Image (cartoon, rainbow, N blue to C red; front, top):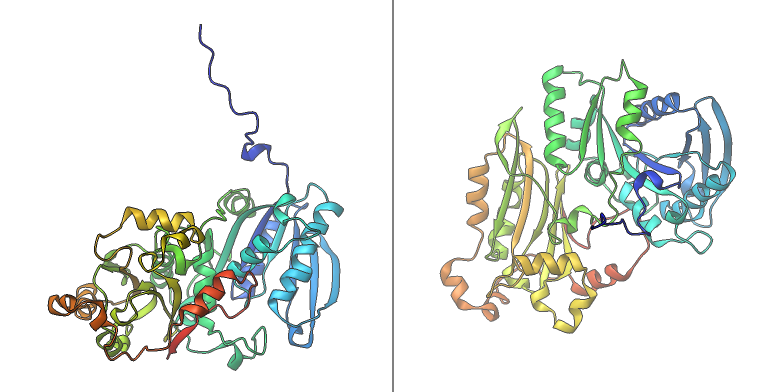
Length: 439
C-alpha cells in the first residue's frame, strides 16, 4: 500500500508567512495617490501609512509622517547627512519600516512614495541595503508595487517635455530627469496599475488611457477606479495581499535581454493606441539609424528596448524614449563578445535567454524595440527600421569594415561605464543610462 507524497518539511505557503505585508504606493499626482491610500486606511484601521515629504531635501531634511485611518501617530523632521533620495531611503525609510514591525507587531504597512521617487529605486535599495545587518525581507514581506495614475492628467504627463528642475520639484541638484521619464518608470515597474478617476474629455479618452497603460505594461494587473465612488473594501482586496511582486524580475531596460516580455505586438489600433514590436538579427548601420531618429519617434508616447550597432559590435545599446526625449546608453557586452570565463558574472536568466535564441553567426546580438503611441503606422515603422539594417553586401564586408563606418554615436556608449554601473549597488534619482540623449 503506497502512501501519498509528503510536502517538504521546509516548504512555507504564502498563508503561513507571518511577516507583515508591505504595499508600496507610487504616483506622480499626489491627490490620486493619497485618495487610494485613504481608501485602504478606511478599510483597515490597523494599517500603517508611511510617507516622506521631500520639500526640504536639498537642505538636508525630510518630514516623516506615519498615520492610520484614525489619525497621525508620528510627524517628525529628519535631518540627513546628504540631501538625496538614496540617503532618505537608506537612512530613514527602510529603518522606519523595520522599526514599525517591532513597535507595532502584526500590522501591515503602506509606504506612499513622494511623487518624484521611482519604485525601482526603492526595490534596489531594499535589495542591497541592510538594516541592523539584515535585509528588511527578514521581517517584512514586500507584497506589491502599486502605481496610481490620475486619469485627468496622465496624457499630459506622458507628453510633457518639462524636466523636474524647470518645475522646481527635483529631488537633488543633479536630478536631470524629465517629468515623462518619471511617469513611465513608475508605470513600468509596477505590479499593479490603478487608473484613478475620469478624463476631463470623457469616457472615450478614459478608455484610451486604459488601453495605453495595458500596452505600456502588459505584465501588470490593471484596475480602473471611479474616484467619485470608491468601494474601499473591494479596492483593498484588489491591492493588498496579492503576492504579485517578483523581486527577480529585472528593470525595464534589462527585460528583453533576460527573456522577459518587453512589449506586446498589437498593430491594430484600439482607441487609436498601437503597440509595435521590431525584432531583427542584422545590425543597424549607425548613420542610417541616426538619420531617422526623429522620424520613427514622431507619433510615439513610449519606446524602449535594446539594439546592436554594426560599428559598435560588442555593445548592447539601451533605447528609451518618453516625453519627446530619446536616451541611448550602454548596457554592457553582448555575451558573444565576452570570453567564456566571464559568463559566470552574467545573470543566469540572461545566459538562459541567450542560449534559447543563439545564432551560429550573430550569437546573442539582435534588435528588440517596442514602440507605443497614438496613430502609429506599424508597417511604415517596420519598413523604416528595416531600411536601417545592413544590406547583404554590407554584411558580406565583415565586422572589421563595420567598425570603421562613419558613426554619429562614436564615444557615446563606453563599455567601461556600463561595467562600473553593474557593480555599483547604490541608487540614484537619475536613472538614465550613460550615453546619448536628445530632445
